[in-house]
Amino acid sequence: MRKLLKDNLRGIVVVVAPERRKRPHEGRDEGFVCPFCPGNEAMTPPEIMRVPERGAWKVRVFPNKYPIVEGHEVIVDSPDHDADLDTMDEEHLNLLMGVWRRRLEAHSSRPYVILFRNYGLGAGASISHPHTQLVPLDVVPEIPGRESERLREGACLLCGDYAHVVATAGGYAVGVPHVQTLPYETWIFPLSHERTFSGDPPFGRILSRLIGALKGEFGVREYNLVLHQAPRGYDYHWHLEVMPRLGKFAGFELGTGMRVLHYSREEFVERLRRALQLP
Ligand SMILES: [Zn+2]
Ligand SMILES: [Zn+2]
Ligand SMILES: [Zn+2]
Image (cartoon, rainbow, N blue to C red; front, side, top):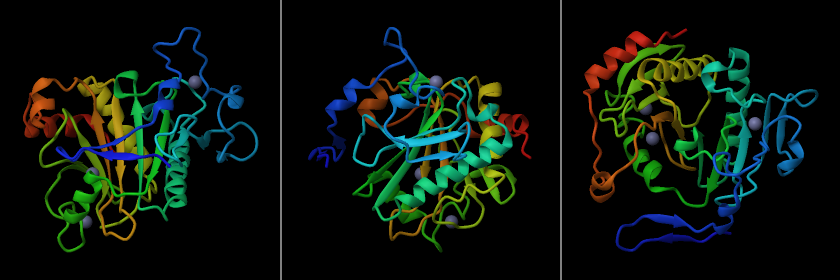
């Protein structure tokens, strides 16, 4: 088991995982061969799951070869190296969302499990082949822990007016947080108060359209997705945070913890509403 270090001045938790240095890196390694492409399955650890079970796979799951902590999994979202959520068809999206849900459920006995997706080398991905990751944790991290206090039934900010709703479809909302902490940050969440991710249709299609709109209208090329759901034993209102990565944090952001936006939320809501074509 890894050691978690908590800085006693700033309260930030650090995981020391030296073998992460050995990760292959598409943008750096000469003669890089993608371990996530069909035909290269032997380059990854043994599979946990593949869909469909027989024939050519559409989604594969296996342990991360260079885990942050034990139980760290990789979900290869598509056999297509150049695909992204906005290029996948609806059937594939629904299948992928089902895999996300099943892998989250598989770790539900752990205090917390975080699912995230880094798209683009500048968003922290070392391999550009579309993939999602899942990390079970033995502690409830600070951000979901703090959110759980404000997302409890009866006092839930997401059931209230925390997010400015841009559009709704099939029981889900696309909404802009009260204050965006990154340019063009947008969330998707169920309109009803639900603790854990379901991802039932049309969630996949909404996510796909949102990514398409952020790319087409706002020039987003790289982004992170973070799925926040209930820590074990807590109430919550799950949500997916889409965090475009357009700039880097500079001295001001690192030194103050504050962020800078170069437009108003109203302006963004207006543009996104026009660009977003929901089913
Ligand atoms: Zn690939
Ligand atoms: Zn709620
Ligand atoms: Zn959150």
